[in-house]
Amino acid sequence: MIRPASLRELFRDAGLNDVEQGYLLFLPEVLWKWFGFLEPALAWLPLGGQYFVSGRKQ
Image (cartoon, rainbow, N blue to C red; front, side, top):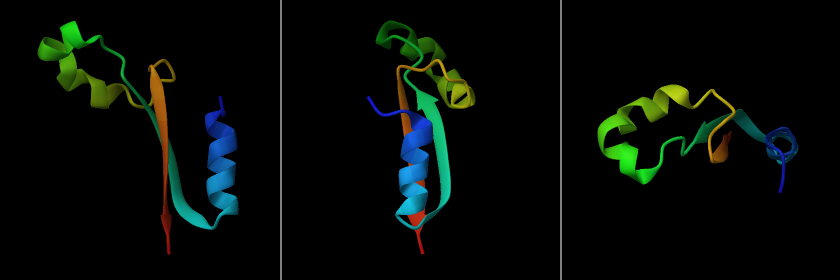
């Protein structure tokens, strides 16, 4: 497993700008139907089941 901080550093070393990270998959599928709208608001919270790192190449 690669830590988010390590992946952010690799993105920057590759010349990517606007590097950001977030977390997702907080809710089980059963609860998504009713509470899925809350998930985007939790992206800052490092408790999700997965994380993402994104960046832009200029």
